[in-house]
Amino acid sequence: HALQGPDGDLQRKIRESVVHGQEVPGEIICAAVAARLTRADVLAQGWVLDGFPRGAEEATMLTGFKVIPHVVLSLQAVGKRSASAMSANKPNGAQRRRSSIKTSDSMQLVRLQVQKDEEAGLVAHYSLGYGNVVELDGTRSKWALASASQTAAAEAIRKRCAHYRRFAEGKAYLASGLGIPLAQLQKKRSEYGNYCPVAWHMQGSLRVARDMRFAVIHLNQVFWMASEDYAQQFLDNPEVFQMRPLPVELPSLIRLRDRSAPGTKIVLEGHCPVVLGEKNSLLKEQHYVVKYSDKLFAITRDGLPKFMARPYDFADVELPALRPPPRVPDADKVLKTVNALGKQTGAKSVEDMGTLVSFLQVSVGESVCRALLAANRQRAKHPTRSAKASALLVAAKHLRKHNPLNTELEQKRADADWDQFMKELQLPTQLGELIVQKRLAAESEGGATWGSIDQRRYQEVSGEFDAMFAAGKH
Image (cartoon, rainbow, N blue to C red; front, side, top):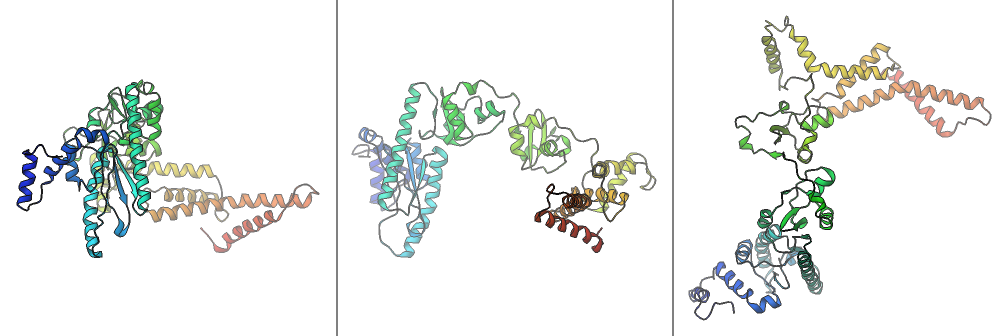
């Protein structure tokens, strides 16, 4: 049936291969299958392919003849029952299953591995290109698999009919399940490109969407949605979410080979604008370079999604007036940096140069100011130290806690030391409040109460207070 007449070209090529004992080329088989599947009787009744196509190459050839299954069923199993890929469809489909030929265990395993290799490319071809793959549990019984296959085919037909009805009524409809190639969807993108119009309209967020399952077609244009919920909202009111156009300036990633091109100077001295805007701190890790508003920004890996979604929140941040010099790996380079600063101002040596104070002010001035402010806010005296020593300890521990050069282990130790010191500063106040509460409870008749919980807390605070003096801490 698939041959083009008794003396057709397909018939001749297949006959030549058979007569010479050669394997029939894949393109000839695909052409013969396509010729049969495009006949009127098959188009009217539908088709199911079992064991074909056998891999991504034949699937690509079959697609070239515009033969695309409505649904592809992929069996996921374990061991010898595993991973036969099936595609089934009604009215269109392709199906694969494991052979029923009984062979040795070793031969079964070899065949299984070959089939797995072929199946991966086959499933990827239909899943990434058309989004029509449904995975089934291959360990279930044949009756359960038959029922699941019929359900998947029926659901594909139902979706397709629903899409046709919405198209006839001039409404928006989902592109998934229609067998539309990804390349064709990209060609018909709306003015929003791959940005989700619902996220932009409701949140002002430039969310990039690339999932074919949530692509919506409206008035012969494709709108990409970031989630199923956004897709449903757009289907209900497509006109509403097209009222807010995208901004003229959009962020774009700069390729690695273009970073060294003339005029590609990165602003903010290479510090990440997201970290600077959210945490008011400096972080210089150039994982990505993004162009926005005619400026180049160095973005960290964690900051990239935030910047790409809301670049206008971070594009205008400014560096602090006082900031440390570039980090250097060793002391020799530190000395060279100091000498360079001295030469810029005409100083002859580090000892007599007047810029040493400026260097210290730029490098550690801001951190010292924050530490002194922390000591001023606390205004607490440590039980074993004088007021001056307590204030210096607060400043020193604050500097250690907020040292940007801390390793992860050093940071944990500094945090624990700071928390313990703050707890000790509060011990006199807590102990005094408990003593007053206990005295009032003893003097009152039926008024203030002193329970077992209060007594236990009193003993704990007293023990900690006494332990400070016994251990000679700090």
